[in-house]
Structures are given as C-alpha cells and as structure tokens.
Length: 345
Image 1 (cartoon, rainbow, N blue to C red):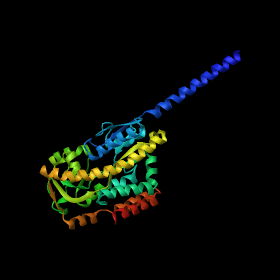
Image 2: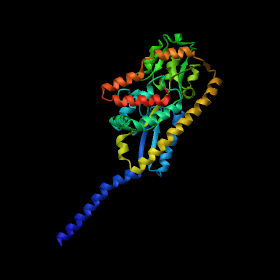
Image 3: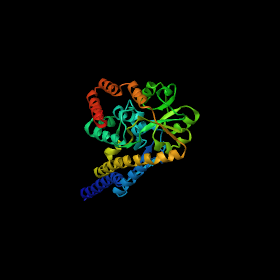
Image 4: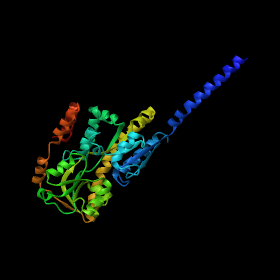
C-alpha cells in the first residue's frame, strides 16, 4: 500500500513539475512583447513604415507578437542602441550602422561612403544583393548579437546651407555636419571642416552656427523644420544609400517560434519595398513645401561636382584594404564588385 501511494504521489509531483516548467514557455510563446528603440522622429516616412510593420506583425500573428516603438531616442541615444541591444535592455533597434564603423564595417560602408550612389532604388537593390550574396553581412550582425530585418531608405542627401554655395571654392572653411569615418574625409577634400552632429542636434547646430551646411534630404528638411534655419539647397548629392536598419537581438530572434520568425521576415521584406516607395513620394511632395517656405534651389556647377569627387579619397580601395587586414578581404572585394554592378560604375 505504501509503495503504491508513494508511486502515485511521485507521479503527481512529476506531472506538477512538468506543468510548472512548461507553462512559462507556453506563456512566452502565446504572447511576445518587444521594445524597439528608434533614432528617428515619428513624423518621417520611415517611421510610418515602422508603424505599419509593427501593426502588420501583430495582426498576422493574431496578436501574439507585439512591438512597441519608442521614438527619438526615448530609450537611448542613437550611438547607445548597439550597446543596449547587446545588453538586452531593448529587443529591437532602428539604428544606422554608420554610427558603428568599427563594430559593423560591412553594414556601415553603404550607410556612410559618400558620392557612391545617386538613386533610392540603387540602395534597395544593393542591400538585397549584399545580404543574400555576401555571408559576412549576417556573420557581422551575429558577432554583435543582432540580426538585420530590413533597411530603410533616404532620398539623396543634398548640400543644404544657411548661405548659397556658388561652387567648390565656397566650401573652403565651411563647417559641415558629418557622421562615420568617410563623410569627414569627403568634407575635408572640399576644404571644409567636418563637425559630428546627431540628428536631434541639426536644427540647433545650424541655428547657432555650429555648422554652416548639412547633407540632408528634402523630405527630412520638412520633418525636422530645417527650412527655418537653412534656406539653400544645392543640386549635388553628397550621399545616398540605405539608412537605419531594423535590428533584432539575436537572442530574442532565436527564442522566437519558427512561425513567428516567418511572419516577421515576410513583413520585413514587404516593409522595405513600402519604405522605398513612400520615401520617394515624400521627396516629391517636399520640394513644393520647401519652395512655399522660401527655400531656394541652386545648381552646383558640373565641373565642380567632378572636381570634388576626384579630390575624394578612394573610399572603395580603403574599405578593401582595411578589411584585408582583418582577414575579410575576399568579402570586401565581393561587396565592392556588387556595388559597382548596381550603380553601373
């Protein structure tokens, strides 16, 4: 009798233990709440895509995956996001790899090498090919505890200044906002003075004279009200390419159910296309808005455009040389080969 009773109790305890250990896992599977830090203001075209993306994931997972987005660095400044996601303080981040050239050199290259693209569609094609044809991109993200889900787009960053710039000679001594490690060298090649500023600092930087010019797109000029402090846009593209990616913690990703991963990947693919189209549309609308605000658009002499580009360092060669030292030369060469094929140079 004792033996039988002990066996029953043991069985009940085993069952209870099984329920106890299984319940948290089932609870996590049934409801996933994720926090995402974004460096952007909520008014940008890309932000509208992020909202759509998060809501679409919620709907397609029947409300079991919920992503809450915190805007304008509410959870951390742009340059803090990588550390925050690595520490597990946030689950996702919409952040630009160009802020982390040492940790994310392959991702940072398209996000920072200047005068190397001219059209929004080129950024779409480039990132699709790099992410599928160059394994180093996913490996680099994994080394940093992340996985990239999709990349946002920006309209061409033109030369936006407080005063009109008539040509390359007018750039001498001008203080220009930069980021990363390549944009400063582009500014120096034109005789300008590079000044590192984050997005939230642009308006005040122009207003107080910390900078004279910034590379910026016309739609972002509207979003950030830059037209109030800088009314001259010059027809020279200083930078074009993919901007911030939406990154997810590798740990969070690996803990996700396969069906949840599938939904997130599909919606992310659709979001990239939606982002491209909305960004282009926003740029077209912004020109009329800026003209109504008194912004003037100027031609930059073609000869001076070529002279500036010629004066720049060979950014592609430098990128390959740097990665060669780290044993990733082959991946770097493949990256640049694909890049040249996409832009036709």
